[in-house]
Image (cartoon, rainbow, N blue to C red; front, side, top):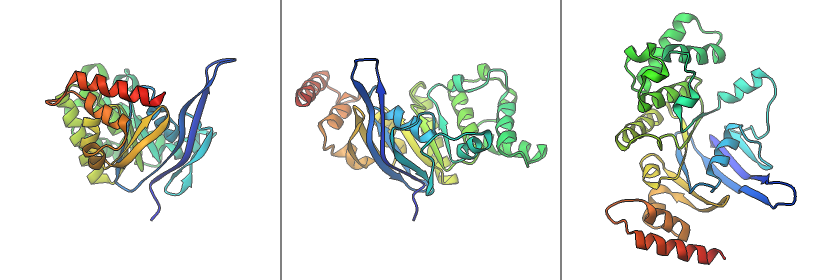
Length: 278
């Protein structure tokens, strides 16, 4: 069976200036994501996880490697509005800051209708109105909020709107870049439960980018752990979290606050890991 998303040999480097060394943001990244599966990409700031997400969506062009959605090549940039809209129907992205991704001038209803008009021009106004209602219901927003502007919504509500906008085009893959990190813990739990329900209902595949292993454990089947642009560990999420095989993964787990959190142990693991990298 063809994977919904297949990534192979994905590499991206950046030049930091004349005479300075090239920085490798992602090196030889490879994974597959099946229909309705959820994959977590985790690592600290600078690990390369967001670069991988941006390449998959098409916001960043890789130096080499391939990206395929349902067997179709989508590695390079495309030209023309029609081609861009076709590609956007395959993969959509939800960003960390929902307020920045929403047009402050548009109500929730208008924002969703705008997406539908661009991607489904053949639909009638009534069809779009029905679809907007369905999307609001899908992300757990009350109909009364349809006429609200972004500034009138809570952070959790805005993120639900951002998810609804992404789902409006019917993507095969939904990429979420730190999509709950700006929310408080109780709202995080609601959004994660929502994503699990959406995945079950629609069959959309999720690529969940996060620095938080606790969050990843709630919403993913598989996980990639990235460090300095490389995948240092991968596998079933619960297996990796229960029995990490790489020192960096163990350090990340130990760094997460909780009942067993010991700052001195975290400092020791960081020192040991830093020493092993020299």
